[in-house]
Length: 155
Length: 155
Image (tube, rainbow over all chains, first blue to last red; front, top):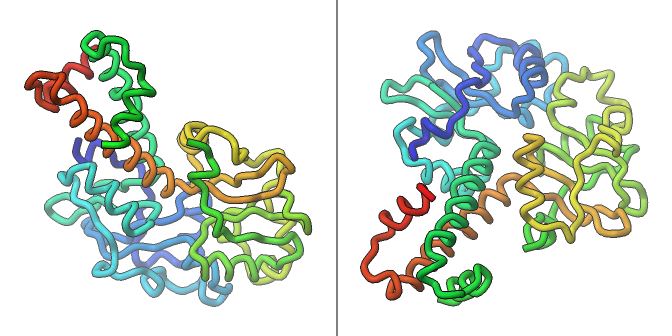
């Protein structure tokens, strides 16, 4: 499975000349905790997190969002052709809520969100593992699922 | 596995008389996107999300957080003795980033965060499934992992 099959393509896109106030309202309206900042060709320029904007006062909120974005060299990024496994590793390693996904031209094409990963992992592993056991049941000659998992845990 | 084995006990605890400004600064400092509001006995009173506070102006930020919290009847809650599976289902169903965990007395004892679930699911399913296969390898008489997963997928 590739990152492109896991990502959310209905994400919030922010341009660098939006004011902090505009971005805050967009995040609130769309219920997004973070968003990529892109240029006029949709190329990734940076990243903005809701909690970075939380501490700004009314004066700061009139400024352009580019002043408060994380610059691209500090942003965790995935390529749409990366293995989905790569997304899980990065989300766990960097403890982030979401990661922007770019194509080979550097254009932002989606966002991988933690909740999409949870959903996919729960589906991918839970159901197939159960099916796997069902397939093997005859060959296992009466071993229960619990006994099997116990055996697996101690290997 | 129970919710108590999955939850983060090092969470941000907020009292109802904290100002919005204080809570915003705590969230920013501790990098938490949400927090439970508790009374003097640590009983859950409500929940606060960073994006709800994003749109408040300097005047609003002087007010007490209780004015902007989600009241307890609208908050998704887990009991520490619930099955971990229950946490996965609720995170996916309600698309939330984290869920407060209470004990039988209604006291908040932890928070289940989406990233903890991702970590645990990745560990629980990925590694044990591989180990499972290793345990079974002899009995499987030369079937490969790929053949096995293919067989499982079509059941």
